[in-house]
Structure formats: C-alpha cells, structure tokens
Length: 351
Image (cartoon, rainbow, N blue to C red; front, side, top):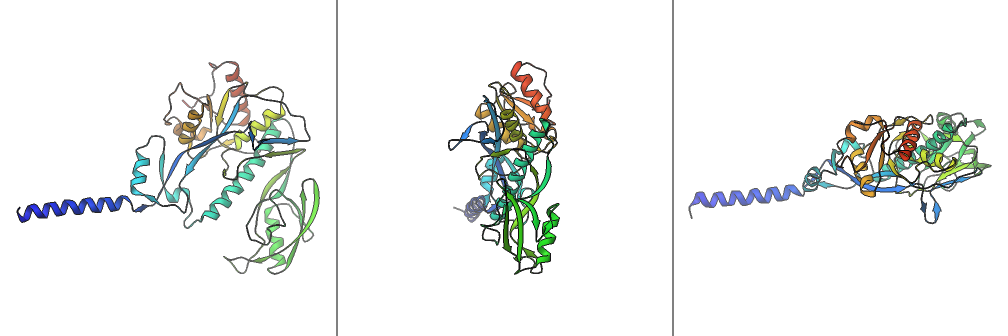
C-alpha cells in the first residue's frame, strides 16, 4: 500500500470521526413539535375544567380543544444531529434559541413567565366571554405569580385582588411597586386583598432584590385583572402555560353560560391570544398545533389572522381539517355555529 493511499485512508477516517463528533455537539437552536391537545369542555381529575359558581350554566357537547407545542427547554442542549432530524421532519420546526428565550434565561424564569401568562390569559378570556354576553367589568390589580421562597410565599396568593398597600389605595401595578419601595427592605408592608369573596389583611416583610440591592421586593408579579360578577375558574395542568389558549378558554366559558351546545357535537380546536374586548392575536408554533389538532380528530381549527399564511403550510390534508380565520371571539362563535349547522358553510378562510 502506497504512502498516498495510507494518507487518504487516514484522512477519510479523521473526517468521519470529526463529523461524528460534531453531530453530538450542542447547537444554539430549539425545536417545536406537536404537543397534546386538551378538550376544555371535559373533566380533569373528576372535575370540570371550566368551573362556574353563582350563575346558571348549561350542559354542552362536542369538543373545544386548546392546542400546545413541545419546545426544547432553556436548560436542554440540542445536538446538531437532533436539529437536522427536526429540520427534515415536516411536522416539526427549528428556531434559533434567542428567538424563543432571552439570553441566560433559566428554567425557573421560563416557568414563572409562562405561569404569569397563563393566569393573565385565563382572566382575560373570562372577561372576553362575559363582555360578549353583555357584562361590564371593573378592572382591578391582582397577583399573577408568587415567587417560591420569597417573603410573599404563604401569605399572598395568585389572584388576590390588591386593594391597598400600607393604606394607599391601589389603582394599578405601578402603585404596588411604589408602595413597596416606600416601605423599604426589611420593613413590613401591609396588604389589604380580596380573596375568595373576603377581605383579608396580610403583612409581608420586603427584602432587597438580588439583582438590585437598592430595590425592595416581596416576591410577587402583579398585573391587570377583573372583578367578575360570579366565580369562574379554569382547572388546567400547571404543565401548560403561556397565553395562546385565550380564545379557546373564552369560547368554553361562553358555551357553559349559554343554552344549547356551541359546537353541536363538532370537534373544534384552535389557538390565539385574546383581549378583554375579544380581539384575537397571533401565537407561535401554529403549524405544529394544527398537526396536533388533526391527529386528535378535530374537524375545525380557529386561526388568528396574523398566523394564516403560516397555517397554510401545516402538513395536513385540506380535507382533514378546516382552517377558519378568527379575528375575534364574536367571529369565532359565528363560524362555529355556522359550521355546526352546515359543514359546507362559507366561513372566513385563511386561503
């Protein structure tokens, strides 16, 4: 065997080794895959997912499915081989990590952000449903999240309506922050909150922020909420977060509060953020959500207008699931009712 032949063989072996090693090196990307769908008109752990107390409700049938995506976590590393496998899979998507996560964002920060978005979206969805039914709601400031091991843990609770802090009437989230800063680290702040229909007074000793020792914190995230005329709650798993189920939550609440069945037995899925006025906003992972809905047997999928172009690229047959453009909750209600009456009805389309 000549020296040139030996060198060529060694070079090929080295290239194979290098490519094999590179395939397992982490790359700055994340993948999105179709996640589970959940019928919010069904039960979870023996209890209805949408729970309403203090107002007449009506039985319903059919399905209203929220849709999810499975995303590589901020603490997970994705190899080149895994990224390439997802790239060639028509049902999955690959995104640069910094498009999905902030730099250095931790698992806990992602969970907290997702939880805050879920609480806020549920309350806004309830407000949208009640607004569609003609209710006028007062806006309040409420607790959206309580940080574990913080001064507020065990004292303040998610969805506490904050009425006063140290005697100051609270009009918005900024007023809460100002009152805590005025109190200062190491000093107790007195919160007056509305919880489960009762007014409670709670003392929380503020501490210095780890990021800014000059700033006092108690360990809560506060934001806009609503004063509802009766109790409405959504019994969903803590593993599901984000704001994208707002439209489906709103439709489920509306369905439970109106006679008859909105879907009339049709399996409906969808996605979209929602405002208290009922406007539907865009979300991420639309193609993966449509695939998940089709796999679950959904016949109709409600698409936020800004996601329509991308939705048309979902790897599903046109006959398999009908994509309906849903700019608002009111439009979504009309589309579902029209489809339930006539599956050949002329509906707002993404096409």
